[in-house]
Amino acid sequence: MSRHYPHLITALALCAVPLAGCSAEPAQETSASSSATASASSAPAAWPTTSSFPTPEVPGDGTFPAVEDVDRTDVDSTARAAAILLHSWDTVVDRTETAAAIRTKPLMSDEWAAHQVEPERNSSQGAWLDPASHGAYSRAQAVPAIGDTTRDVADDKAVRAYKVTWRWASRDGEPAEGTGTRHVTIYLERHSGAWEVVGHQSHELPAGEATS
Image (cartoon, rainbow, N blue to C red; front, top):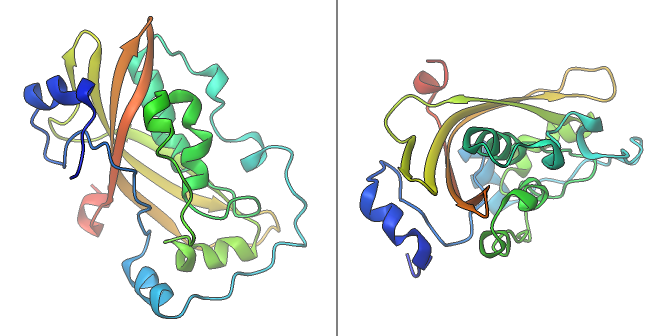
């Protein structure tokens, strides 16, 4: 990777994690379906119209975690809320997965928040087609991931890992197809008594791991 945050060097030296570490590069959108991504790259599918669904007052009709309610003095509260928010999408108002990361920016450091920039195309567009046709939004849950990734690196540095799963809640009463499971790693630092996200990574879980 081309660059690293200076303040994460200590964390990298003290915690060997099975993932790529505390990356300073912008988080890339992860496709919920590799086959969907491949087909989208060759011939992007037409995006279904959501004109029949009114723009919600708040994304997810108020079901997404509210950043103002997060206990920033508690590392686990901050990390878990971030993990869920990063997978909280509303197909009526969101153009890409990164829209969720942008909503999570209040929980991030200024430096990491600056990296949350929407790409030109949603890498998960194929997986969003059916949910979008129902004006659906995701309902995400996060539980601690199995393994030794989660650790307190120092008094003011921590790593938390979660298994995040989601399904879609439709707005038209018809079932919205599609679910997903990812392993999410959140890197945090505490400044002035408040924890903030200074990096995050995720990857799809294979079917066997997703059901364990």
